[in-house]
Length: 92
Image: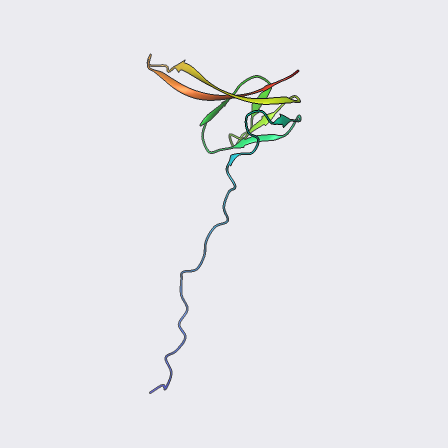
């Protein structure tokens, strides 16, 4: 008989790195062209003026100016309306 318990391997202890999602530039802050405004999964925020959307739904600035958040009511294909958040970059 063994005097000590054998050290078995475990299948636990692995974790993925966080994705660092969220708002990167807030309302009223200055944005330069190419600045990431929001990293998101899905279209929680929609792109407004001077904002483009990347293939992973990241919103980024196309011009220099102030970041402005607003709400907008849009109509779905089935006629229902919903409130969405839109992010714009307003040039001077």
